[in-house]
Length: 278
Image (tube, rainbow, N blue to C red):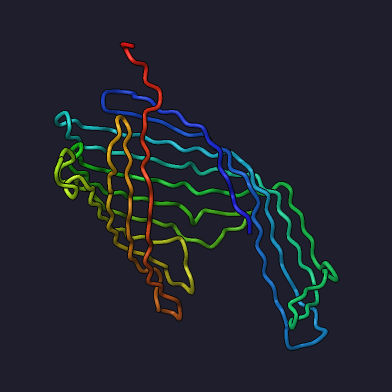
């Protein structure tokens, strides 16, 4: 239960011809709770047991990146980029409680905890965030096409909370994709001004169950549907469908086939225009 939020401020600038760099400083904060219960619905009068692990988290994190562009012509370029998140330690106030309670399973009514068996507090705990790296490259021609590939990796195996390793493995992912617009200036063919998008990805997740790595892969197809222009306004409806598979049936595990639908809107308008002539 719960979650984390991030407030950040960033800045980027052009360092050399074709080279831009930037970074973010963020503050991460929030509360997380984990519950685990052992109940005996068929044994009347038996005490049930619950473990509650709660963490109040807050701390600073850093993101950074760089991008280099090679211009072949005014509208054709090759882009290469890197971004990353530093490995940092967040402050955490931790509470661990084990309590006993009784419950009416017929009416699903739970009594107030009868006894607290364990109550440990650690006001100076730490949550270690892993270092994450992203690499990408793309080739594009303005208003015509773009094709690219990304690779990401995270040192998640080093993630720990309250000094305990979380039992995760390093994760990585690779994805490729592109977009083609047949003729963005076409006046009499709507299909020619539509953006056609496609992609594929493969992920080795950070989860290991029964000694088995959990992997995921999928393909996607999308459309960018422009609406009629109105002066300086530009609007577009973005629709995509993704089909993929996650997990495996090996070692008595679960495999999931899924289809995701995505809908988004691009809203681009120029509000304040100072005219040269009245």
